[in-house]
Amino acid sequence: MKNYLTLVRSLIALTIFCGVLISCEQKRPLKTCETFAEMEDPTSDTLSDWSQSLPGLNASFVSIDTKYPKSVMPQPEKNQSCKLTGWKGEKLSGQLLLWSAKNIQQVECEFGDFKSSDGTVLSNIAQARFVRYVMTDIFEPGCGYRKPEDFPASLTADMLDNLECFNIDAKTARPVWLTVSIPQSAKAGIYTGKLKVYARDQKTQEFEISLEVQDRTLPTPSEWAYHLDLWQHPSAVARVQNLKVWSDEHFEALKPLMKMLADAGQKVITANINKEPWNNQCFDPYADMITWTKNADGTWSYDYTIFDRWVQMMMDIGINKMINCYSMIPWNNEIHYTDAVSGKVIDVKADPGTKIFVDMWTPFLTDFTKHLKEKKWLEITNIAMDERSPESMKATVELLQKVSPELGISLADNHQSYKKYPFIKDMCVAAGAKVDSADITMRREKGLITTYYVCCSDKFPNVFTCSDPAEAVYASWYAIAADYDGFLRWAYNSWVENPLTDSRFRTWPGGDTYIVYPDARSSIRFERLIEGIQDFEKIRMLRQDLEKANTTESLSKLDKLNTEVAKFNTIEPKEPYVDMLNKAKTMINELSR
Image (tube, rainbow, N blue to C red; front, side):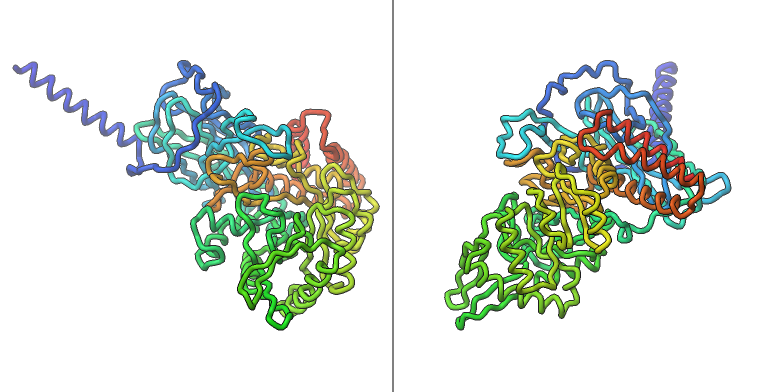
């Protein structure tokens, strides 16, 4: 009996001791980590062998250039530390990979302060976001209608979720995207930061980040020279969040999403001036921003209430350089208006060059110009056209110059007809169409913008969900190498039916229609796009400083920089482009020290 009581006491003591150990290891209050379910992995990856995985939660720093499959056991070299280098005002990225052969509950990531050897502290400059997997397909055949069953599907890591904690299922990997935003006011130097990873019933893991803050400063995104034009789609937000279009709640839901775009340096407000400009090519039609009414006496009235509210909201957020209004040439040449007598909405076919085209657009352009003058927006407003035929453009430009010559013109040109319109304020050419350097220089001297775009027809560089992450960076290196002012891409948020889980669409490769996710969730693609834009700005500023110094040493460095940048003046690189980027970035860091 005595031995039995001793054994019981020992077991009780051991139980209490183990409980203390577990609670010490956890160090976090219990939470319920609820979220939506990702789609089932359709590949044979789910049959991968996880028997060699170490027990518990595994974690390691990995390259941001690699997307890890969800169901394949990762085998990276275990790395508890990483190094980041950047300018003041720059946003840097890192990636931590988590994986486990068993279910892991309540994974949380927590950054501490970044501290330098002289005691300087940078607080609240980093965040960790769990990367979510969405379904994607493949590029082939690029543009054109497609059925999901006709193309191999796979889960790809892309969306950055705004979750406090995450449960990791057995035999899965879960990337964590790390973002370090260096304050413009930071003191140059080397800082060390700690990242702790907690999980229920798991030992706390600690990782170290060495941050080199260089003594150079990026301006705020609104002051970047890079002309970023990602087309916005407001009505998609209303549908996904189940809100009435143009309600107060809709406008409130738009603000955080559009603020994220402003923080990327966006310069252009996308607005529509009549019926759906692209003939409902997206899942959601574009809701009217300007209501046209034909009165009983044959005169016209135009209600700009929604247009004004949308534009003012965007300008208040910080997107205020240009308003591009689509379009006098919608893809089916249809416009519509409300008949005041019958109350019906009337559709009209208005082909450029016809009498009805002139009769419909002349009174609108006259009234619109007057309204823009009153709002003091005329100088930054363009009538925008997208991939229209040379014949349609000719008739449209002639009418604009006759009726409203003060209005600017914007064109996404896939007919290599830019030479016909040297006065167009915002000219964007397809990636495969080279613009003569003399024409770019001439346009820049006149204050005109010249950019390039990629779409469903461009395999590289692009930002599909099936694209490699570094392609988004390469896009801006190509822009500066080819001497463009920036980059256009449709679309920022033309969401598909279920954008949180399935990026595929009835036309075009997955992810072609959007680069960010509902509720202001970023993506790996969007973060890497910003990275490339920052590189563009750093190269531009380094060039200016080296030219200004005008010494033998500075001009030698400038020549080295220009030689490296020139390698990116192609959309068909002959060597591994990721290696090219990493080498060039190392050179920029050296020139910045």
